[in-house]
Image (tube, rainbow, N blue to C red; front, side):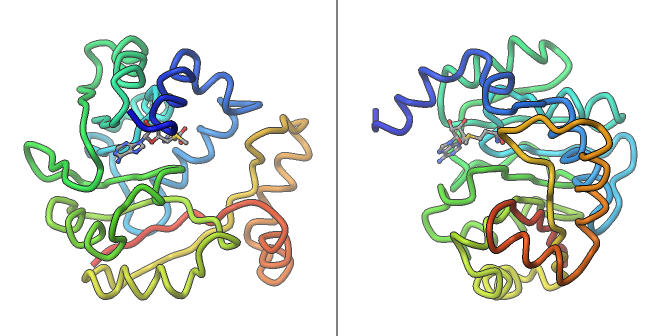
Length: 208
Ligand SMILES: C[S@@+](CC[C@H](N)C(=O)[O-])C[C@H]1O[C@@H](n2cnc3c(N)ncnc32)[C@H](O)[C@@H]1O
């Protein structure tokens, strides 16, 4: 077991509650954008969440009428996700680089885990073989150049790419009014790009 997977094994219990200062606000906004950015998801659509952790996002997607399937490489995370979601969603152990679902899914997501793709373009190509509507993931523009990632998506046949700033902070719980202001700032163009130089991430939706 690598040091990193050992770390996830130790953090699996209450991952969502500990990783996010306001887990409900953060994951609700993520779930809303998963559904609305790029091609729309409709109730009944199935989403495959690669590197799902303890399945915290699953709660929010199931409550919006979507079907949810989770996959994670850490057995302890899989156990926690199964405990959280019970028989409402299948959760399996797997590596995002080679996992394929039993049948095509409407959407695939990868949150805070795109760096586990061994070869990013090959990973996008693999996901495109079983994903009907879109791939959604988060992207830290200070870690990866968005232009490079967009080029890999297009080379994998995912030619329509939308980037949306995501301004709900992970480690700070904002009062509701401030949080609404931050979400409004996501659409502010140059101001949003300035904020992204310092912190926050993009949400990316890529489709054929
Ligand atoms: C930072 S956590 C993110 C969890 C969740 N997606 C979230 O946003 O809260 C990264 C997750 O990736 C999982 N992971 C790491 N390498 C992986 C791989 N090759 N395939 C699938 N999951 C992996 C870890 O076990 C861990 O649950």
